Image 1 (cartoon, rainbow, N blue to C red):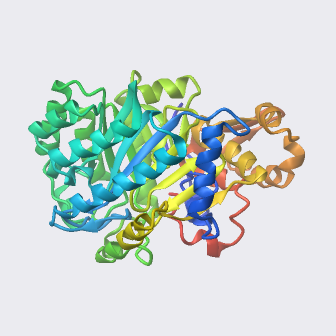
Image 2: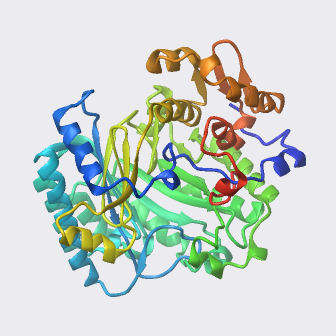
Length: 464
């Protein structure tokens, strides 16, 4: 597929200079309600244990470590900036309580096929604390042989000896936060990390046999230009990680206080961001990377690229996943879980999180039980984002609806995108075009019944 930006006009850029969800879930997390309580989450876990309605899905586990030693100005994650590492001791104790609550409701030894430590900075924890955490998880869950066990790494917090520890603990996938190699950009976002440091760590990780190495990049940061990002891409192609996550920076200073330190006039224009995306797609494609979708790339022999070829991609709160569908347990402050047709989210502050656990309750403060309509629309949106197409028959058989009747309004609205060359539409289904991948979020938004007003869209990032 040709991902060049030829044919994208100024008119299209103006038309799609809008905000919209990233669809790491549907419905999106902003639709969660406080009427959903810890008791509702406990009930969902109990139903999973009993196998109510359907056979339980595979299980994935996410652990949020919120601590960071320094502030990155672009960051929109839930984090606590501190140099006091003793705070991790108390946090691990509360994570243990949350794990115990899960085993009470689900039973000991549930098999985990995917584990991801995110943050914050998971490597804020010392080697001994990481051992304590992994021992805790292994006592309560069964980590499946051959599973995917990954951890996010700030290169500034890790050396080769720490990589030895991570390998010994069973991690087989690493994700390095790079964002940009340009010194001026690094200074503008308060994250100085020389490229030599990253290259040395990736080389050391390969020598230790980690199965997959991911690098995170962000385009649209202050002081970036298409030309400066080209230089970063050239270095990334030389580094040749197994996976690349390429994210568009979402400047939402009204929601995320650290971003107020970024001068708006230093940000690249929408046209420059699209140019960065276009040139990134071309550069990475020429380097042999498979464009998995929206923000992920992988080498052809990586599990993510293989899942793409085999039609097994799924999208969840960590981005694209190799498992087509799974339940997700989220541990820690602000973590999100999905159990069956239920979403839940933990308290976002340490105080509230700990208070719930002190009372012997799950720290869940909001969530959502999906309706039948949510489930149908979720299937359509995820098919667009993961496969770039929707086959009407598969939706009709899976959800017992007549697609053209159920989505009559959406199909009518889709005609405008057909005329602009973003999708094709025939009697069997919908196909996103090469050009349409630049605006695939806009295609998905057609099927999002929650997006009715500009007011609801304003809280999301720009789609380009």
